[in-house]
Length: 119
Image 1 (tube, rainbow, N blue to C red):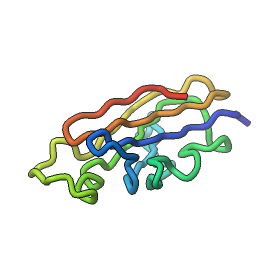
Image 2: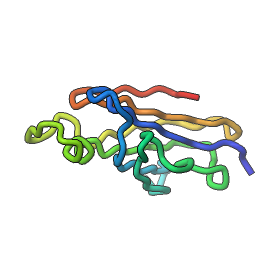
Image 3: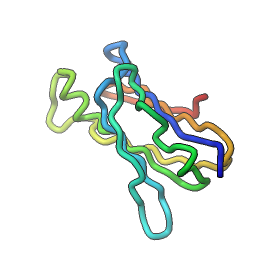
């Protein structure tokens, strides 16, 4: 069994706080199309309560994290616009080492975002 795992963390850069209550969905991307593996909601620290892809399910391949930014921004009272500039944020990435910890954070504001491979 692989010893790697996948985590995420969402920070609300406009408010200077962790993004609590943001829904994140993980898909594995394969030849037969995307397959949903997990859906979680971020906690008070902006993280999921456990790995979004734990060791038991971890394998190399192509994945996509989908962050429901628009619903989160609505929930925290960010002034609405119709439509929102950012609504659904997909981040597609590859896992090439089954023994590593992959951390894919999201730095979010109403008009921009950033990500990187964290530790």
